[in-house]
Image (cartoon, rainbow over all chains, first blue to last red; front, side):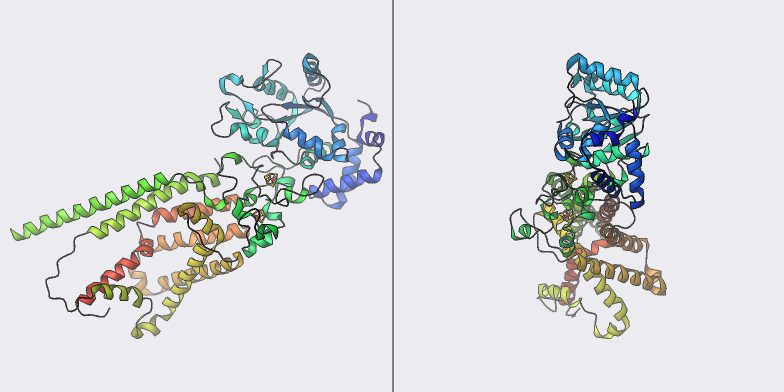
Length: 354
Length: 217
Ligand code: SF4
Ligand code: SF4
């Protein structure tokens, strides 16, 4: 690895101006809630940072996370962050195929033992020894264990890798689990979302490159800088929520006026993500701005938390049968109690008569 | 399963089951209990009218007691109206009821509900102070009174905390709010909170019995 491999050199090669680069550093600092005084430090650190080897493993997934990453920001500078890391293995993006691809992975592992970054998207099936998803004849389970051994840290990209995601949704036929349920002896940062916001993925990597460590995490191992607030906390429809102005359907007058989508199932109040601030499609908008409630895609088990279009406060409590049965039992106990007291009274009356 | 999933899921389901079963047990049991035959000649036959009258007449204290009890009944009114606004006019609560029973009605602004919630808490605290500082009230209060007070207060306090984002991450405080409601539902049929249902039949029955005896109660 030579000095030519620093980001500064690569950026110049890509025709990115100093101004554009500083703009990116400022945006990254602001997204990470760092003071403006940190911008030159980030710039200096990024400029001189060497390319770390990254091995990206894709398991039970839909490739949405990679789509999200590659689509939205190329050819902007955030996309170039990926040029700055040495992406040595990635199914979808690498040129090599078959044996050559696997050899590239092994070579990267050997050359960078203990130093490479492992990025995982997709959950890992563990039922029946993990046979439900294999790569080059190797189960995801075995590959994860093998690659994780020499990794400096692991980034679980997407809700599947972070918590199991869709594959883990009830009834979870493949026994899907999150990365953290298998690997317990390495630092893991979760970047959930279905898919995650591209600038959040690159933001986490930029943080790692600039500061040489992972950002501060919350109790679900999510970087606090991006997942510290709920969608509801920063939602521009919040004033309507406070005033009790809710859209009743997706095309009523309230919806047209941009009223709050809580009644239509918005899970913004319990969803931690940066959508409302970082936004999607190069900062164009985010789902709520497009008129759809948040479905809580960056939260564990969001598929199994009740209907996407059911209001959050409706509860996920079970069946009407259970309640009806309880009513029947309650009434029966009431009748029995009353009859019991009647017969006791009758007995007492008889005794009095005797 | 997160705490919130537990509170909204199995905990809520079981609380509702206990609430429904317990309430019906008490209602049916009270309904079917044997009443002693009144062998005296009735002074008035219009017992139903007497029952209905008493249900309403007791909304207002009798003249003789008005001035002496003004503190208590004004506060009780404030507390009950505030509670009714919080429980039945907050849109997320209406949506909850709609999910449960399929009926709904329009809500009011969340700011107004928060104001009602604050007033409710203040009146409940004032009523507790009265209970603790009035010797005869203190003497006749039992543990049920205090539990019922606490289990009414907790959902209001936790609900307002969740709304205002105080006391921890929103999902956690929301879970505590729902758990406190779950707890209240479980306690409801067995303690004094059951007056929320029993006040109508008990007043009616008393009114009917008094009418029969020719007493305007
Ligand atoms: S649309 Fe969703 S996130 Fe926005 S204010 Fe309403 S409930 Fe909150
Ligand atoms: S608004 Fe909610 S559901 Fe939509 S992408 Fe953001 S976190 Fe996911």
